[in-house]
Length: 139
Image (cartoon, rainbow, N blue to C red; front, side, top):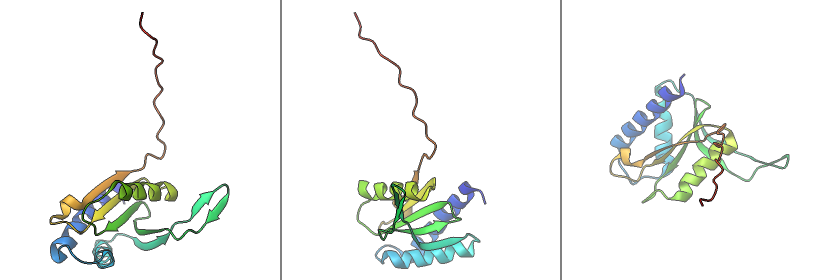
C-alpha cells in the first residue's frame, strides 16, 4: 500500500474514533479503538512494538516501545495531554530514527477537535545537507 494512502486512512480513522469517544479517556482506550478501526480498513497494525537502542555495536533493550506501527512504515504515538510539547515531538523523531522509519504521527486525543491534535512528522533518512557557500568579508 502507498504510504500516503495509509497516512490518509490513519487521519480519517483517528477523526472517526475521536468523534465517537471525545476527549477524556486514557491513551490505551484510544489506541485500542484506533487499532480496531485501522484493521477494519485493511491496514496492518502492530501495537507496543519493542524498540531497542543500537549503540557502539550493542543492542540495548531500554524498555522503549512504539505505540503503533502501521503497514510496517508509519509510527504512531498516542498522547492525552493538555498541549503537545517539544519533548513529545522529539520522542517521535527519535523513534522514527531508531526504527529507521520515515513517517510518523503524534496524536493528542485530549482536544476538542481531533484535527487540532494531529501532528505529522517526517524523518529525513537520507537528507543530505546542502553545501554551505563560503562568504568573504566585504571591503
